[in-house]
Image (cartoon, rainbow, N blue to C red; front, side, top):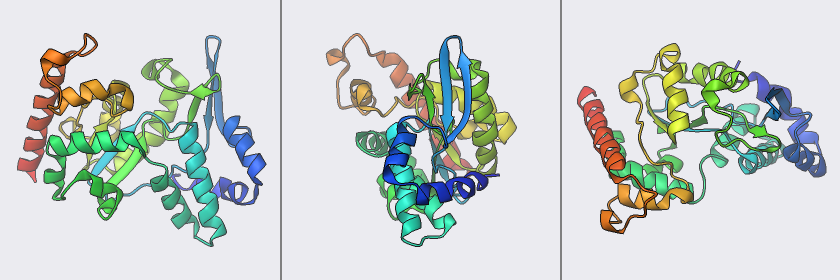
Length: 266
């Protein structure tokens, strides 16, 4: 099942002209996979080449859903690779890695994972290596594998994922399937909504709850103050009222204990 959609859409991605592709990215039609509604809000699920699964991964980094920029990056990279003569498998894999967790978000994520001991657990110098020469150890994914738009805007958590049937159908159909293939890896959910979804399908996918690293602050730039405190770079006395320091410290200690336990089981 995992490869069928790329096979289905690869010819369109390769042969459509750029104006067609840009129109599809702005308002999916030929690439639309599903449409539904919650109240007055329209929900669309669009195809982009995020199908590749690294079955040898030791760590799985899980976001919420690719946004429109990631959709564009993946489609254009797949198009470039297909025009360069790459096989379907190579284009599928290359597009996925190219569009996964780029920019400042990646730097924040690397800093937090390194700080709580994930690089040491994996036996690498830094989790930054997961995007370079240690890429065989990581699988990048989202609980909503394919881009989701609400009234044309990137889905960011509203309506609530677990309470929205069209969204949970996507989680069970795609994420649960790939998680089953990776159930012996460590799962790193980015944000509370993602953690809820991962935990909701853990039983179906055979994931040991002890291998889910829940509690990291979301690595987006909007969370920089929380991240700075989590990393010990900002003292409690300088925090704004938006930060709950005790909750962050509790999450950090729980994560460090979980990582030590995983290490003891190796």
